[in-house]
Amino acid sequence: MGLMAAIRACEAGFSQVTILEQRTDYTRQNVPTLKGPIVNYLEEKGITKELGIVPDKDQWASFASLEGALERRAIHAGVRILRGVVATDVIGHDLRGDPPNQRYKRVQIRISEWDATNKVAKPSTESITADLLVIAVGGSAANNPLVAKLGFGYDRLRAKNYMAYALFNLAGPQIPRTPEDELNTQKLRSLVHGRTTLQTTDSRYLLLSLTGLTKADFVNLRHQQIRLRSLMQTIVNNLFWGERKILEGKNSVQVFKVRLQRARTVASGLYPAVLLGDAALTPHPQTGSGLVTGFTGFQALETLLDDLKKLSTRTASGPLLAAYNQTYGKATAERALKASFTIADNLHRLLTELRNEVNHFPQRFNPLGFTQFKNTITILIEVFAWARGKLDEIYTSITAGHADYESAWSDQALMIWDQLDRAYVRLKQLTQDIELASRRIGELSAYSENRGQTEPERTPLRIVH
Ligand SMILES: Cc1cc2nc3c(=O)[nH]c(=O)nc-3n(C[C@H](O)[C@H](O)[C@H](O)COP(=O)(O)OP(=O)(O)OC[C@H]3O[C@@H](n4cnc5c(N)ncnc54)[C@H](O)[C@@H]3O)c2cc1C
Image (cartoon, rainbow, N blue to C red; front, side, top):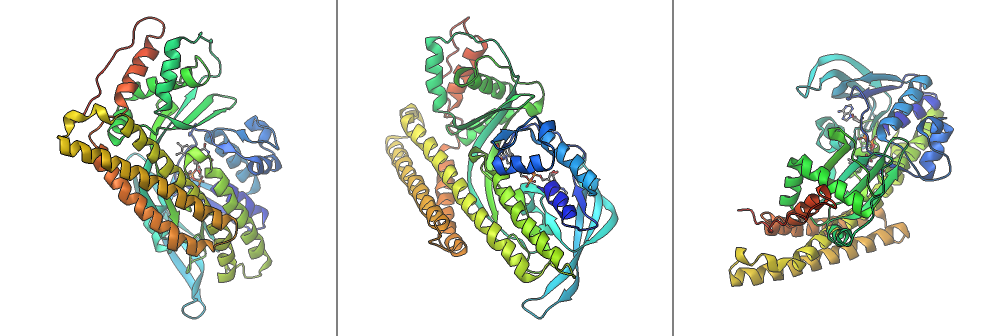
């Protein structure tokens, strides 16, 4: 999003546009869905051909190729790009207006080289002063002290989901399906949900929610790359494209947590600074909405830049920033509701799966404890179902224009987030020792490795002490 913002700023006539990028190269191979408006934007910039995509439809390209193409376009437009650097301080200049509406006219940014090996900033080497600072540093913004200094605070949902993605080769032989494959397909459906399958010119990409996993299962998968690769391989063989091989390299397969956080405001009240992209809201990748929501912010930024250009002072005034906040803040509230609905829905699936399997855990509980365990699962299932319903209601009332998004967010949505968090803490306490999915994952992996040769290995369901 930062590259797009910089290109647009040049187009709007800003003479000195600088990008500070922490990474020295673009290597992310995961693949976002590029919805129609984003594809049309890329077409307008003349970079659809090099990405191997066509306009007017949903398309896909890896982040690496997308970022590489946008970087070349940005350099061509006159953007100065500093790589391997971070901002180490921000200082306001020219305080204007009377309290409580005071606002800095410009912001000075101190820049340091980033030591990626030791993960520290070297002593500051340069500083630049800007009329407008666009912060598009991704989800790390919520933990960045400079973002806090600029006046941005975040609401965070502690309830999490687990997801995984893998990249596969484009072609492979089809192996005839067996009755065992059909059984495995059923087992897999209890583990995964919300699958996204995309194809780019280089690979096939599979992204899915691991809804049947407890924390213990997740930790196992994260620490056992071989098992994770095997699981993803089995999933792709059974549910999707037949025999495709996961590409070599650590980044070809990943398991990760989905954490949701939303900035309370996307325009600073004191500095000429705005948030854009994941810095404003981290998306739920299952809903494929990261770039879609970010693009809404980009469109609001286009208006802000055009309005600024009309002003001789180029001063990001309160009303201009308030307009940005209104448009983009509403979009992030809507998306956050959708994403938290998805989180609640997936946790509901996990609990339902746990209830189906509950008779496998009697040894862990005395008779009274076991009954309580089952009852608590049932209560939590109801809480997550209730939360889903409420979040959906709030979303509908905002999108239909029946409720003001800011008050619906702070008065209602945050209350549901609080309930979700409490239920999640209880869910984690209940399941922290239980490897609910590991037995099935072991069976499926063994079957995948020996497909058509031997019987799958049977491992007992394990409780960790
Ligand atoms: C595994 C995974 C799968 C996903 N799948 C999808 C999908 O299918 N569809 C979809 O639409 N979205 C998907 N997303 C979300 C998508 O990646 C983001 O929404 C999108 O990348 C947001 O763009 P951004 O520019 O806001 O942030 P980012 O892409 O995170 O870019 C932030 C940039 O800021 C740089 N940076 C960070 N900190 C600093 C600093 N302090 N100083 C300078 N530079 C800094 C980073 O190096 C990076 O280049 C996925 C996300 C993940 C993690």
